[in-house]
Length: 187
Image (cartoon, rainbow, N blue to C red; front, side):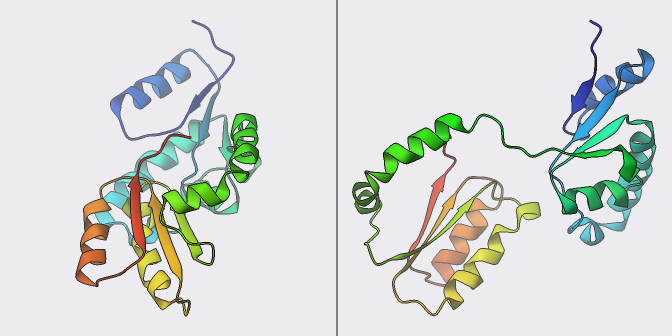
């Protein structure tokens, strides 16, 4: 069909490239939308960085625009040659009305929920929500949690990913108490 614009959220698989080329062929505006940030880019392997720079610089020149999730995301786009004039701030914040309403209801059950999770009223809680993968750096949280000078503390990892077993191993080897990995949870 004929579309007013196409928003692409990745550049890691063949389907994405086919969609991008189709947009170019049919002169359909194409926008990039990702929450990637520039912080990890200098630490990538030189070969991967070279290939990524080569591909993304070309693709970003052809893009109509970029929906950015903030300053670090804009820096990512600029790192690969995107024109800052083509960027528009776009916050990933749609569809949260139901979550907000449910949160209000759950506040009334706070003590019951804490008890079911083994959390005492006086416990200090640290919560990580996200994919357990290198680019998210969840393994940085363990040493920070351990160094907290607080006796009654709990850490919850809510999410799953390739680093889960590594994090579980560190917890076991270092005998870190008060850490729970819930795995992936739906909204």
